Length: 212
Length: 127
Image (cartoon, rainbow over the protein chains, first blue to last red):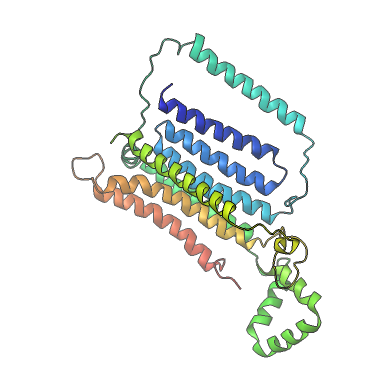
């Protein structure tokens, strides 16, 4: 085993451990953070396989952005976050599917390496196209998909804004109007702070309704 | 330096960083006095006692900021290969420098439209 193999095995073990912790963690937020660790480990695997641009994509998009979206998704919904125990009823089915998938993939890999078509291949140096090659390919051959991609991202952005924005007249307009009134009129704000001293439950409820 | 030598240097830096962190934590654990008390575990040691848990549902408007981050994160990924090649472009390469610059600014401009839309619709304003 070369040093390269040792690093590959170590990174793989780290990734596998994080993946197991992702599915066994009782706290959903911890599971999301372990998922981010797993994705970072996969970035390490890409790096060991000499695919440094793919590792960069994995780190920036998956660990940076997708993990953030996961955490926001957990915080925006009333998912059982916190210390409440998670217990999914489909655990047996999930074990069956993932175990079956693992056996099939392992069998395919072992078959390819030991008995199959890859049996006689010699060990080659691990190389991959560099970032320069990828950039040249994008701008020499794949310019149209690259520009279409920007339209796709634009569509996703506008879709998210349309879904998340509160139109006037939607439910929740009252809460917005109340907050704007308090902010825009300084004289009433003074009386508001007076009354908030006498009615702590009311103000805390209001703050929880729309505030950060 | 070859590919793995470059990243080997980086890996050594990461390992040394982890070791330094571990060393600092072990030294501070050995040297600090240990006086546990339930007061130290409260959210605000002096102040109003916290009510409920920290795990609450947050406002949907945060989602737009997260989504804006994701979109421009994906954009940033495509800036990397562009930035690597754009300096070395000339008439002999398959891509002309002007073509690469125009293609990238078209890409950025399309996404800036999305940002302008978000700005116009007022989702960036917090009121």
